[in-house]
Length: 403
Image (tube, rainbow, N blue to C red; front, top):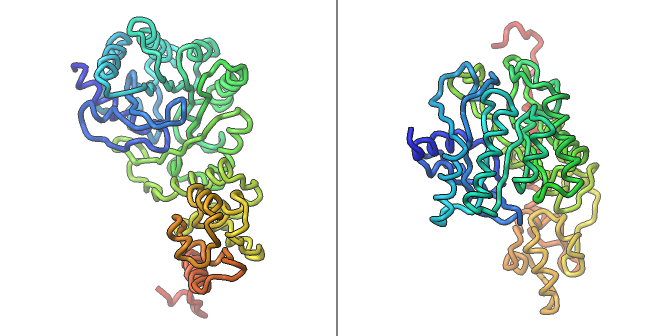
């Protein structure tokens, strides 16, 4: 293959690596498959070259299309080759940063060495001083991780499952303590010492389960995310989505509803940006430990506390306004900043400020009064809640006669 072909193959193979919430999901063939929009060191979106160093893998993970016993089209970049390909894209103004990962070709440290050589060439020969996000491979040595911290801006590790019990049957060959927790601890120590410029992130996979097993619930993934952030000081824990792949034992498994990933991100946002306490966030999960798909977590948490008083929008603080369903940071700031112009009197006033009034109406007061539309809006929300509950079953005195 030439460089263009390799960018197409290895860029498409890297599409499951998450660069940020604003990433592109394009899988079109060709080198454009390697481009995505992801967060940079300043948490601002930039165009990244998202690519694998190699797609040859020693592991046989049951869910991965690059597993050793599968036969996809594979490719591998030499460090000089990939550095030159990136430098060309950078010189043309097509990319502002690099997100580099790899399958484990040989050992974890051998694969890490090739990625680190690529970045070293970029930094020295091509004088690239921009953003680099490097994926640390499970099982990488402390020395390799320490070297990575001197070259990359952000380091991350794909944990994939929230606990060792979920590894059983997935044929990953990865040891929870040695290959996952030990590198995370090393990353934590380097990060706390200020040696990782843009922090450390991780990734969990939604909907993956060994054949005959049950996938982790939303609650298990959420608890895993909280534990990873607190125990290892991760800046973010991203959520990927399991995709059944041809040539794997899970090829016929059902893909999770894509709304699950979106709900987990919304749930996580409530804690990290809206200052919801853990006990409040726990109320968002249903009896099966999942987040309602038809109800966003903020609304689910609010409905779990029906005794709370509605918020008077004309006097409430910015932080209290943020806790109202249908009011986000932008609309909350507008409400506070424009109060000097006069009181808000009806839902139309809120609508003009960007509030989603169909969700906010039951939970606000306007000059001490509930909006007339609040009753109908609350009825619609409760109807949606009932629709998510278990379906009624017709009982029979003679079950053997029912079909």
